[in-house]
Length: 353
Ligand SMILES: [Fe+2]
Ligand SMILES: [Fe+2]
Image (cartoon, rainbow, N blue to C red; front, side, top):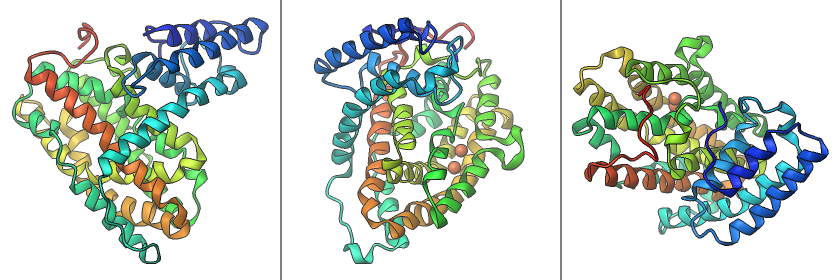
């Protein structure tokens, strides 16, 4: 991914630091400057989840653990000062996610701890997924979205879907036994079951190409608002911190449980504009696959994990409800913009779209 445009002092200082060789005296000075800025800036930030500068800086720090940033040395990945900066940003972000998750969960009616079998955990998660009755982007896409709005929809999704499944994969070595086997079973499908062209990220890239869009990973990062970056950062936070392994499994379970029906509607929206299976394959695939994945993710992955480690129930629910909260906020943003005839993006869509 190319280094995006800075959105404020933090991302600007981060990109300045990354432009020099990691481990040099110059690098240390720049990271120290960045760390000071982070401490100062965070004091004045009231909405970490919606803060463009914070979310972009975090997104790029996490990106060092995925495919990296163009022109930035791989040595930066484990540069201690930069890890420290990441942790400084993660702390308030996690607090904000916990607060948002709490209001999304409402009053949960949980069975007593002794009855928390894997089936009971799955039932609670299915119950949560069923209460997700917020504004529906999928219905809008199916019935009303213009071609430009379909492209915007793909742009928001592209920051995750072009590396679909990667954040949850971090959890594999952090699990054992039944939940580990369940996660690997799901991820094998997400990664195409041995066929690169069937990887979900590849299917999504094909959808983008079908609309004449740039399918390069990160091509539209500059266009998406903080909240779309926050959705991906949330997964990276949960996936990269072993103590949050419950949250990443709850997140995946909720994603799988709220996927099948919306994807049918998304496909319908693109069919309404005359696109065929070349474009809709990504969505059609999820209608089928996620009807199976939701069972494995609910019972064997999240449920199996809570059976093995009952103390992780709270974090499993955190992952699920935080996913609902953040996705709800994205939906509210998209629909408010579209109903007003405005773009939901930060900048006009680049020419390639
Ligand atoms: Fe998928
Ligand atoms: Fe899936």
